[in-house]
Image (cartoon, rainbow, N blue to C red; front, side, top):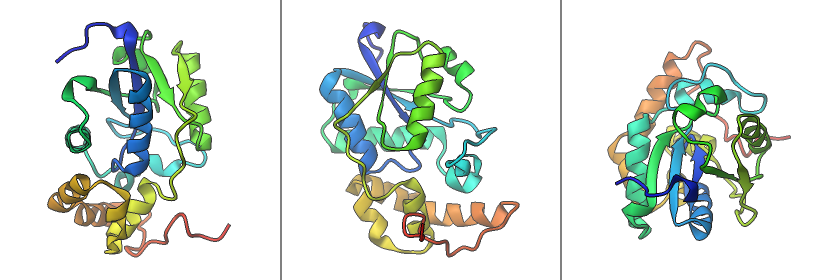
Length: 205
């Protein structure tokens, strides 16, 4: 496809493990301001280091979908939502190793983000340090779930996770047997976790 002018592009980014309704809101908010958007796939390869509060980012069980699977999943979701293919492009987005970003994303591309989590502030700091323009999308709402919760519900065979993604995404994750894949990854991790995990958003403070 290819975009004509890189200076008119914005980029959203995330691990998207998996792509859920909160991510949909984020992408739509960006598309309201820019005609064409790059979807930056964070952690395209294993994350070498973790950041306080998001230590799970480098766990295999928290990254069950490959880079290619995530691009296919998001593309199918966009089509389901009626977003034209011409408006979306994909790129690796190694925010965990920010010095590598310039190999994938030109600095003329605006990096659109939110401020819904503390990790967002750290990402803004990293992007700014690397010379990128970070724009906060204030109209995004914080949803009462995240990728960690969805993966936990899947592992525990609680189908309420399907209400947190679009129907097409839910169908594809079922077809790919993602829940079974996460169980295998959990069992293989050094600090073996129980297969029945606590819901990370329901734990007592």
